[in-house]
Amino acid sequence: MKKVFNAVVFALVAYLVADRALLHVQGRDGDTISCGQGASQIEFDALGKGFSQAAARSQGDAFR
Image 1 (cartoon, rainbow, N blue to C red):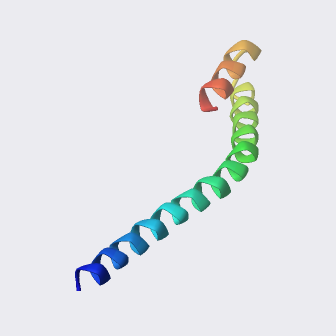
Image 2: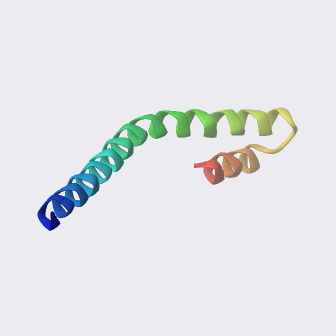
């Protein structure tokens, strides 16, 4: 019975680690594009609100 319990715990931990790694890989690919697009959008919005180019760039960098 103890061997079955250990096998179930090991399988659960392996599943959770693999799932987390998969989510990390998928998230990294999407974050790079969306982060850059979001920073550009923040910079564009700041320019529209009357901020200087340097201030808008700073806000975009802060978003990244």
